[in-house]
Image 1 (spheres, rainbow, N blue to C red):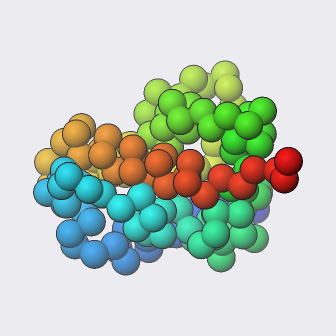
Image 2 (cartoon, helix red, strand yellow; image 1 turned 120 degrees about the vertical axis):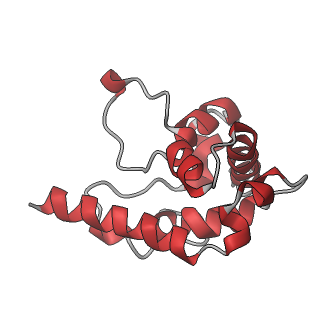
Length: 144
C-alpha cells in the first residue's frame, strides 16, 4: 500500500511540475532555442523531489520509499569525476536496463517528449543537456 501511495505521489508531483511550467517551457520551440536554462528545468521538474538545492530534501521526498539522491554529491560518489553521459542516461531513462533495478524517478525523456506538441529529439536533448550541465555546476567537492 505504501508503495502505491508513493508512486501516486511521485506521479502527482511530476504532473504538478509540468502543469506549473510556463507554456514556453512546454513547447519544442522553447527547448530548441539556443539556450535552455538547466536551473529552470531543474526547478520545474526535479526540485519537488530533490529540493531546490539538489540535496534530496524536496517536499515530496518524505513520501518516497527511497530518499532522492543528493545531486550535489554525484562527482564525490564517482571519485571526483562528474559522469555526464551516465547522468544523461539516468535522466532520459528511456534506455534503462531492467536488471539494474527499479527507479522511482520518472522517465524524463518520455515526459519531455509528451510535453511537446511534436516529439522533437533535439528539443528533448537540449533540455536534458542543460539539466546535466546545471547538475555539474552544483557539485560540491571535498576540501583539499
